[in-house]
Image (cartoon, rainbow, N blue to C red; front, side, top):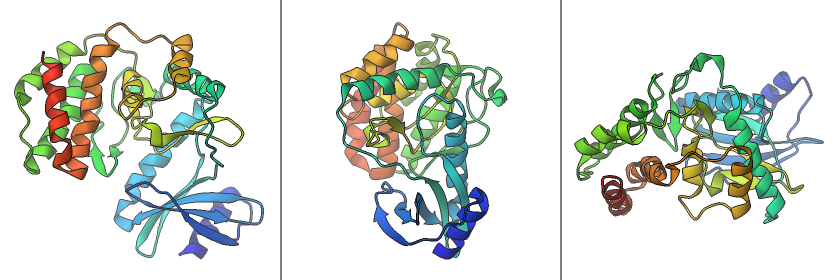
Length: 291
C-alpha cells in the first residue's frame, strides 16, 4: 500500500519520492493519520476504508478552492486514491507549533475574513450550497444549490440533522416550529461566501514559523457567520482572532442571536455521531432560539 501511495505522489508532483520512514500522527476521530518522511520532503496522509474515497475527494476539492483564494494557509492537497482496502488523501506536511502569539491569531482573523470576501467559485452564481455533497465529521452534508440562505439552512442543515436524530431515537421539542422560523431568523441576506464549515479549535493552528493555518474543512458556499460561530462553540479562539476579523470585515448586526442557531447544527451532529450526551445541550439551544 505505502509503495503505491509513494508512487502516486511521485507521479503527481513530478519529483521522485521514496518513503524513508513513517509515523502515526493524529488523524481526528474519523481517519488514521501518518507522516510520510522522505529524503527532503514530508507528506501527511489520512486513511479510511476504500468506500470513503468520495469523502477525501470532496476534502481535496474544498482545500483546493480555499487555497485558490490565496488568502490563508492550508495544507495543499497532493492526491487522492484507493489502494487495497483503503482510501487515502495526501496533503502537504506543515510543521505546526504551539504559538499563543497574538499577532498570529490577529492575522488568522484577517486572513479568514479575506477568504470569506473572495469571489466564490463560478458554480455558485449567487446561490448557497456546493457542487457536491460532502461530510461533516462522518455525517453526510447535503449541499443542494438553493437560492435562499434561510431555506438552505432549514432544509439541508438543521432539518437533515433532525431527520438523522429521529432515526437514532432523538426527540427534540418544537422541531416543526423551529424549522418554520429559521427562514425569518436568517433574513439578513448574507453574501454567499466560501466557508471552511468545521472551524473549531482542532482545525486551526499556527505553524512553527508563526503562520496561521486551517485544515480538515467541510467546505460549502454559505453565510460567513457559520465559521465565526463555530470558533466560539468549544471555548473560543484567542481574542486577537476576532479583532483581526472585524478589522477586515465587521460582522453584521444580529450575529450574536444567529450564532446559537448556526452552532445548533454542530451540536445536533455531535448527537448523531456521539450519542445522547449532547441531547440536553441541543434542547437548551432550541429553546433559546425560540424564546
